[in-house]
Length: 126
Image 1: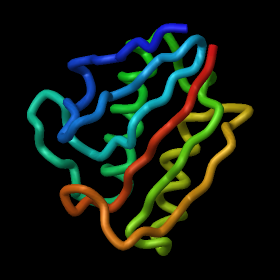
Image 2 (image 1 turned 30 degrees about the vertical axis):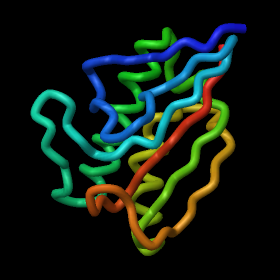
Image 3 (image 1 turned 90 degrees about the horizontal axis):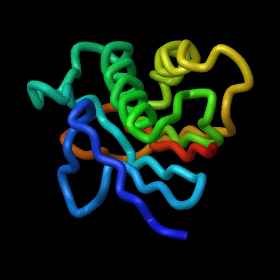
């Protein structure tokens, strides 16, 4: 099988030596996304709900570029600075999965890139 790099201008460009996503066979591995608005490059940090929505929209853009959507997502990892924000993040996150949500873990961390409050990565398959 061949590894294919997935890249879209509708999600933020990587800020380090990594790809937005890698397609390997029918499996898509999406790098952790933070709340960069792709057109302006601004971080959306107004509140945790807006931040999470921007993260999910970035993930959606990458899924779309790979010919997938949230129904293809098998597993997610959510990294939070403050587990006290879990409910708010979960509410926004859950609105993207109408049925059969993926497997998931949520981890509180000591720090995230650019001082954000939430980062989410995904694995999807066709």
